Length: 112
Image (cartoon, rainbow, N blue to C red; front, top):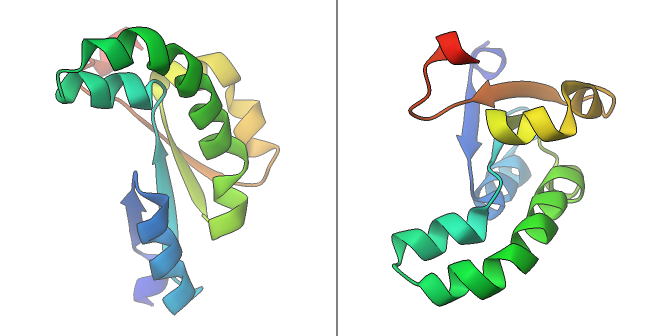
């Protein structure tokens, strides 16, 4: 059964919600990174947002993505960036009965 062998992952909860609403059998993975606003402001070259707004919004959005969105859209697995996982702890994810996937970008696995 293909549904048991595949997972659709995205940073965008709206896409996962749309997919999950089509059929509940599809496994979905919400990718979560800390500092989302900081990262976007760097990509868009907006230092004012990175300096003044991101420090306020980043922790709020991170908590929202970790605790509210997965329940609301019916996510099966949380894909948490290693830096964030080190802060919240794996038990926090497991205790809420979510599958988990730890991801890294440009980081040698030897150094984890």
